[in-house]
Length: 300
Image 1 (cartoon, helix red, strand yellow):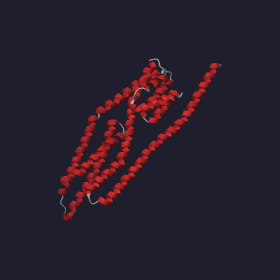
Image 2 (cartoon, one colour):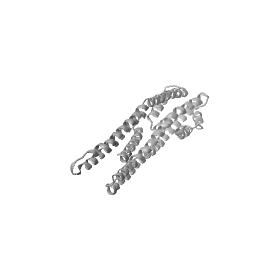
Image 3 (cartoon, one colour):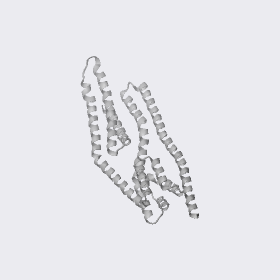
Image 4 (cartoon, helix red, strand yellow):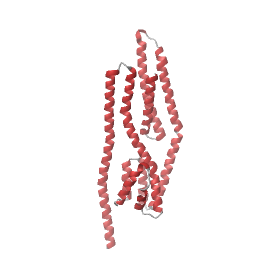
């Protein structure tokens, strides 16, 4: 009777904790959505600033091509560069967490195999440094110490980070543990799988590095052709009644637009090919667009 009563009380306690934690996690998730909204607000603010700069530029410097083009470039950097920089920092932070997550699981496995319980093993890892994962390790330890089940804590962690790789890893750990495997065996198997996946990703990145360099070189060649056409070929056109100057202006604007379009899509393709994500491509796109636009304005 006493044993049944203790088991019933433990089940009630776990059910209460899960119910309470789900409510808490909804609030936490809402805060995370608010953070994402801040990026949208930042994009709106930078877009407004960029449009205002373009408007003033048209009103004040339309007759001065060099100044006009330079201010347009600054407006593009302000409009696109700041949100991309913030988004890319978030992406890098997630990548760092994905890289050190197997090491954290490996440390937990080693602690369990040395005789510690799961809460003790997690608590012991709080003394280690795991780069961007460190604050999350302390948070996970606090939740485990409150009595929240390990699977719920891991699931909440993966949802909060928003990484597909972490979500799949956590789901694998939970399902394998529920199927009857011991936690240290499950974690050890998952760590090996994740490390193998990371190794494959690094090999892919190394194999496409030469192609990424080729992408940059192709863009530089394209840029040189555009500058050559604008500088030497177009001015040689001679039309009556001053038509040559007008034609030169039209072609210069056309070449400038082609350089921006080519740089943007070439950067997206390079990032997608080398790192597998579009947000990584935005970094390359911004570099190529700024480089190409600046070179054409200064040289062409």
